Amino acid sequence: MRLYIIAAAMLIWCCSPAIALQDGASLYAAHCAQCHDAGDAQSRVPGRSAMQAMSFDHVLGTLTSGSMAAMAKERSDDERRAIASFVTGKAATGGVAADAEGRCTQQAGGFPQPLDGPRWNGWGVDVNNSRFQPADMAGLTAQQVSRLRLKWAYAFPGASVSFAPPTIVGGLLFIGGTDRKVRALDARSGCTLWTFATDAAVRAAISFAPLAGTDQFAIFFGDLRANAYAVNARTGTLIWKTKVEEHPAARITGAPTLHAGVLYVPVSSLEEAAGSQPSYECCTFRGSVVALEAATGKPVWQAYTIPEVPQPTGKNARGTQLFGPSGAAVWSAPTIDAKRGAIYVATSNSYSNPPSTMSDAILAFDLATGKPLWKQQATPKDAYVVACYSADKTNCPEDHGPDHDFGQSPILVTLRDGRRVVAIAQKSGVVHALDPDDGGKILWQTRIGKGGALGGSEWGSAADQDRIYVANSDVRFLRDGTRRLDSTQGGGLFGLDLASGKIAMEVPPVPCGDRPQCSPALSAAVSVIPGVVFSGAVGGFLRAYATGDGKLLWEFDTAQDYAAVNGVPAHGGAIDGPGPVIADGMLYTNSGYGQWGGVAGNVLLAFEVGKE
Image (cartoon, rainbow, N blue to C red; front, side):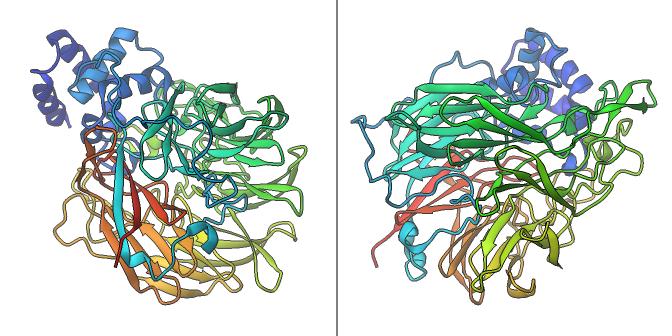
């Protein structure tokens, strides 16, 4: 690792002032290298190659007010700038808008399409988080899928990941990005209508709704500083902003879910990384759901996933005070059960001892009050922080767990016979079905993968009335001290019968061959239309399969260069995080995920059905 840092310093020498190089290299080695140069790629933070693809401004913003602010709080402004210059090999851009091109020639006074027409609103397309798009909304049939052709590409300036899924309503497309901006694009052409600046990056999906008591239409979303926003959907002007959690490591990664005039905001954190520093008093964050009035942003209630306030437990080997219980973050969008007046969330692992019984669990809260209704824990005693995979394991909990948290939303499904199921897949490689009408009783559990810190099922599954469709990651890395992906392990797509849990459809892993930086792993969320399931691969391919027999219907290699409609250099790469969005005869997918050894990229791709 020392040689790697020296080599990187030599690369940057010609691009940055000597003082910035010297300070940046030493500061990085002292405060950053433990995680970012960790030999095990499962350390959950981007490696040096990924950061070199980022812009100076993006990295500086991350250190100053973004996800790394808590870790960099002891550094001065000059030190943060030196680190940003060192890791990117770039200098400040001076704030010049890199995507000034591609503006729509006519600013829309309203919406290009009817608001009650085809749309994909929020993370899961409905409050049940099914990720199933009905035929009338999809405008795309199984017979047409093979004729999908690229229509346009939009590039995010200075990004190495494209991690925010789009929302489509009224012919407009709303999307966030790593550059602390939310944009409204024309869904057909990709031209830009307006841009709104946020305090931090936005990776959560966006929800759209009329604003009660006004003639306005608003979009709602959260950022990586735990701010929730309402913004005018027509003009891009701020309506309100509310900070939902004061903990310095708090963030919003899951999409807030809107229902009956209330915005339900999930709260996660990066304390899992910050807590790995031996000098850090690990850990004091608790996940929560915050209910806000959609019209005003005023808090209605906050329900913590761990009821107990963290208390001092002991000291680590270096004498730093430790706290617990902690963790149980909510990484994904909440699911609404209007019939029972309940909201369901899935939680992450604990961060410290004692492990909480609320972590790695599905929790039910009362919609009106936030009162706990029931819980079902999938993996007990799973206390874990990034230090458990680092060289310095000082803050790794004794007898730490496997990091088998839930990264996706529960799916509420009504079967054809009227029975209801809450189904969800886990990083353990197990798919669970619970009974929402019987206190979360386990109906069945089926293993589809080996599981692991980045294994099993990651970001999201999808379901129709008969099956849940689950992508398996099980991404693995070569055991040679590098972050290189193992091109021979991981992957597989499954359709499980919702009534029994039996595997009814299976697609085997697709080999990488000699493709560089490739894994057959399927980490990204999947999406379904009648007869077709779409799944993106870490190797960069987006594929469509028949839901009946798993036959390949279409594939597209996204890991290539594009001429972006906004004039920004564009490249696709690994597909991870969000899944495809289908609406009004078009399909949209993110491409580029410069983490865990995957190929960096910065594009949103839009496809339409070509002529025969």
